Length: 150
Image (cartoon, rainbow, N blue to C red; front, side):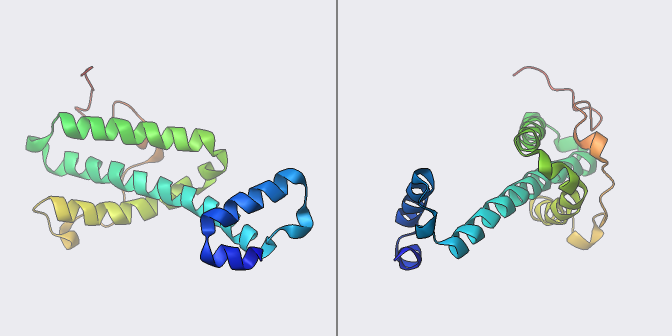
C-alpha cells in the first residue's frame, strides 16, 4: 500500500512514513522511495546553493560591467544572497566541500541572467568565473559596495 500511496498522494505518503519511523515500525516503510526522497533533499540543498550563487555572481557581473547603474537594489541583493548562502552553509556544513563546484554551476547560470538583464550578449561575457571564494564572502567586495543602513 505504501508504494501505491506514494504514487497517488505524496503528502499522505510522507505523513505515513514519518509516523512509521516515529513508531519504530520499520517493516512498513517504503524503503526504495524513502531512500530516493532523502537523496532528493540533499540535491535540493545543492541546487539552492547553486541558485543563490547564480544570483550573487550575476549581480557581481552587472556591478562590474554597468557601474553607471549601480544602486540600492543591487547592493541589497548582493547582501541578501551572501547572507542566505552563509546561512545555508552554516545549516549544511557538508555543502562546504561542494562550494567550488557550485560556483562553477552558479556562474554558468549567472551568465544567462546577465545576458537577459543587460545589453551584453552571452558570448561577449567572461566565460570563466574570476570571482574567488574569499571575494564572494567579503562584505567589501566588489569595490564600491559598502552598504549603508537603509
